[in-house]
Length: 303
Ligand SMILES: Cc1cc2nc3c(=O)[nH]c(=O)nc-3n(C[C@H](O)[C@H](O)[C@H](O)COP(=O)(O)O)c2cc1C
Ligand code: SF4
Ligand code: SF4
Image (cartoon, rainbow, N blue to C red; front, side, top):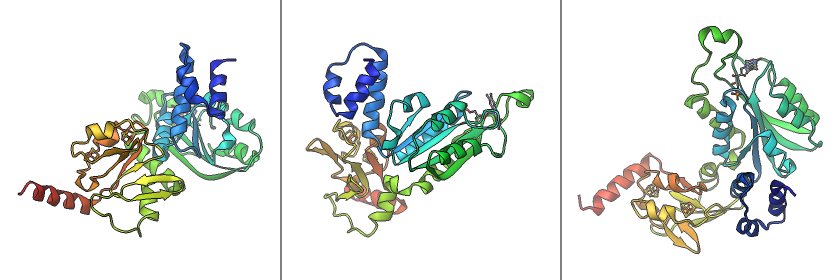
């Protein structure tokens, strides 16, 4: 049996930890292992599938969206190794080639079993306008029983056809603004999947934080700890990197999970987030918090 199939099987029957101990030297083994481990730690309800054959333009957008949703982002070949039916919402995107999405992604959709599932579509294209570019993929998805929740597209670098005269059109795109737009689109489309939104929308009415005692909430199967600096305990792997690197010693470990015990000391420098490989940490500082923190630290230093 090829190692990727062995890994998928191991993942399905939940013996991945044993398999990790038995790893061999096959390079693709490590690749698929990484994919599966990442998939295990991320939002398991959502998946993004994208194809980017020209300049990675669509890949940049796909990763910005996946980052916003904290979900797995794969190519069509990688998606074939997953059970697409397991996902609540799936995003499909690619560049536009001769007026439609990549044939690879359309063929993939055409071979899916008919099933009710929520999907969204995205693309990048050289033309400033999307025209009817999504139509073929959209019809294929609807034909397979899918409900299209929304669509996103943006112009991106194109070095083909008439654009060659100008050494390529839409240079530098997708840029930061395009990625921000893509993130905003995804947040509006699926607000229930953003941890920040969980705090903003569902926890607004909770009691105010008691200093030194971070609140612990269970929201949509996530165990969230802390009000101003929160750690998602479903994602925390207890690596201690936040404990070691936070300049204000905000975190302590308890039962293998990070607790933002001194979250009111947080100066929102973002170092912990940078070190946290599993993206377990969310910072909820607003303007009021920044002022409060400044006053608090001045008082502490007796200024
Ligand atoms: C073979 C080919 C055909 C293309 N056809 C179109 C097209 O019909 N309309 C359009 O607006 N852009 C077209 N483009 C431009 C791409 O859609 C654009 O560069 C896109 O961002 C590429 O995405 P990618 O880097 O993810 O592959 C074409 C590009 C290539 C390479
Ligand atoms: S860095 Fe992230 S994963 Fe590691 S202990 Fe801190 S919160 Fe948990
Ligand atoms: S943002 Fe900075 S101060 Fe706040 S918890 Fe993270 S590392 Fe510590």
